[in-house]
Image (tube, rainbow, N blue to C red; front, side):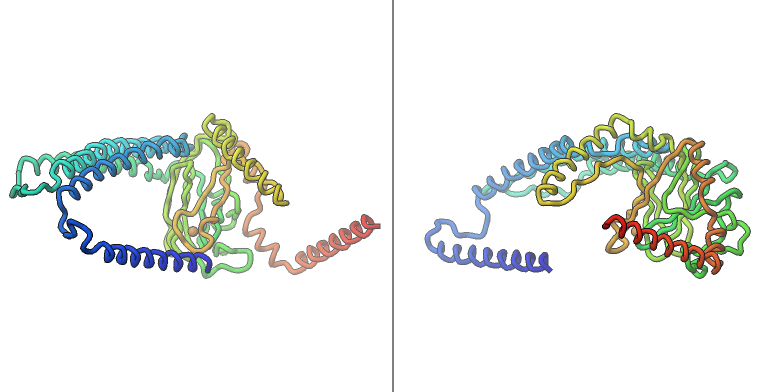
Length: 384
Ligand SMILES: [Cu+2]
């Protein structure tokens, strides 16, 4: 509501300013020597020099941006294919910078050089085949090279060898959270469909499917270092996009179909935390947090917790109001730690079975109320 009011005020202010300039123009009628709407030499000179001013602005802002924000990028890729993506990105950037540096100088210089002058007539110039061939063929070759290299990189990244021993994980997207499902011992995910969603079976896993018997559903993603992880994405409601920036991986999650992506993590979470660039980044973030905390504490609030790095799975499609917060922690473990963690997880089939047993639920409920009674008793004693 406040922002709407601000917008209305700004629009009204703009209208008032526009009206004021009109009144100012009317007061000047008769006093100006040249009140013609047609540009004269003086106007053209001003516009010509403004072109150089704009050129300078583009370059100064680009250089400023590179210096101030260039260091914020995620420098070291955490997946085996990541270097290929970064290389493609870097080549594109270098090409873009070279082309823009040359074309922008030429564009603005010629606009200045051939600015309007009294008595100067434009030359009628129909076409020049040689020039047109040069500016068509050179970009065509460069773009073809870039696209071919991109296609080569993409097919390499997207190739999933079905024979290879991979960890199969389903990423399930819904407004606004991620859930992961591991294929278990058989390494095959059980069938799933929204129609089977019931109680704690929030992913709609078909529990009559033999492949689903050993499936494990979790809300924190653990993956092993040095082994290819084969992700299969599903969405419950709208388009989402599974984005894992440190691994240079992104794939849309589309309702009604399964999309895939596979990569091999090359740094465990602990190793990535120790990378010099990450140590520096975390120190910067914590310095900012500490500064903010002093303000918060001064206002009577509690200080912010220090930040520790973790890989994240984010949603990269604007999917609704809480899209910005749709994320899941990814932990890359050593293969041994991963095995240990996986062994500790309870199978979905077992969880569903336990939830369906009323006797056990009652016992659980009794335990909870007994615990609550204890807590109340303890707090009563504490008060005495
Ligand atoms: Cu989303």
